[in-house]
Image 1 (cartoon, rainbow, N blue to C red):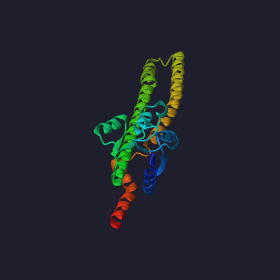
Image 2: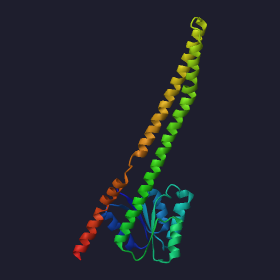
Image 3: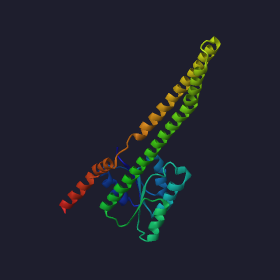
Image 4: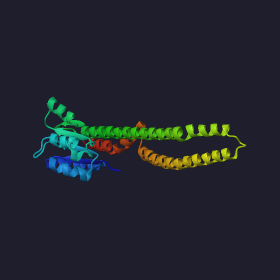
Length: 246
């Protein structure tokens, strides 16, 4: 599946450059001409990464970042990583961008090869974060299942069965009424346990499905590195070809 990148810049030449270059490398690209345009396109396009120019008319990159990271209307998109470009090279400007939630900050003029390396690093980091989050949720599923089984054991197995065993030991087998009473109790307890077992089976099945869905897409660090290496092979080929032509 292609990774989606939203490019936000008020300079048409920059938009076209990134569109052409990143498309060649297998990314799906959407363009926005200013901050307001970007905020409209984020919910429609839902990018995996936003490349955002800071100095723009109408709305600066910092203002866009504030809305995406802190705005209630964009709470479903605040996880999207942002690489910000800016001609402002002061340390304070970089710190401000990073404190707002920007994942990386690149000063213009830039070298395209460095940009691609940073894109790779940001996307890989985000993928690792996603895997950690999924695994934490899987641990929660396992803990929920353990708690359900423990509660069932304590409520319907441990105490009731002990009571039935004690009652069966003390029953007078020569007393018909006592034997009937014990059989009736066994039947009632058995039916109640079976009823809860059926409900427990449904809960376990739902938790199993949830766990399996969370497990999909999980990769080891080695597999993840291999995946990103494959995705960026075209990048290396591009620069090798460029070097040969020069």
